[in-house]
Image 1 (cartoon, helix red, strand yellow):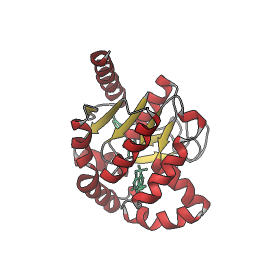
Image 2 (cartoon, rainbow, N blue to C red):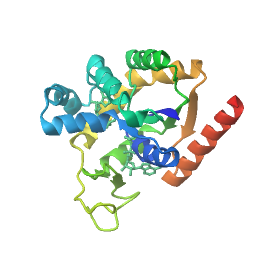
Image 3 (cartoon, helix red, strand yellow):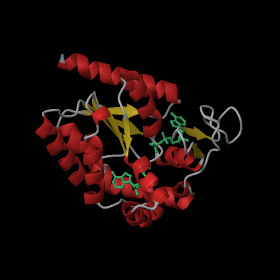
Image 4 (cartoon, rainbow, N blue to C red):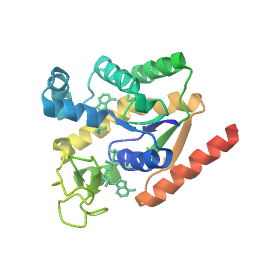
Length: 220
Ligand code: ADP
Ligand code: AMP
């Protein structure tokens, strides 16, 4: 299964990616997570990316495309993948389409999680992340059992520096301007599944599963 997750920051892509990856036994490829690892390790790519990320803007296409192409070459991506946060621009989507066509393995579906801006902001500004397993929590909507500690591995949870109110608003504006056109890009290709993500996460997961099953049945 080869899936792309679309939707504004805070829509719940990372949360739903984990559910889909478990269900299909495929890796989650989150460009945000890979970039944050580069930043943390101080690699040349990380040093270049950081300024863009701090401002809530996109890292240049050529940097991200090369990073994803390398990741797709890894053996675990053979059986499929969930791309979370990529593509985010039309040139990225075109590069992905070309690369997958060359392998004869196109995308199966693009799930687009829709939420209102106020919902996205409330989710982002209350988000906590485990730096070890990358699982996300929310102060109010999905708190850990012990305050600020990951349920799975006991690591202390952190807040992302770009989840402050101002940067979150900038990221939403960048999404509307540069990424929203991808909805039409994938709709034209018959790949887009629009999911109303204004519901608790289990309900959203059920909606995603139903939409995906319906699409696969239609194609069978
Ligand atoms: P994205 O990857 O799209 O930026 P995340 O999956 O990290 O979004 O979710 C953002 C925040 O919202 C996290 O704190 C997460 O726990 C919370 N969250 C995710 N899905 C839901 C939901 N359906 N209802 C309430 N909170 C949610
Ligand atoms: P995310 O973790 O998906 O919210 O991404 C965090 C930040 O990483 C974004 O605000 C961008 O600065 C950068 N980023 C992640 N994915 C991409 C991408 N596909 N293209 C450009 N920048 C990206």
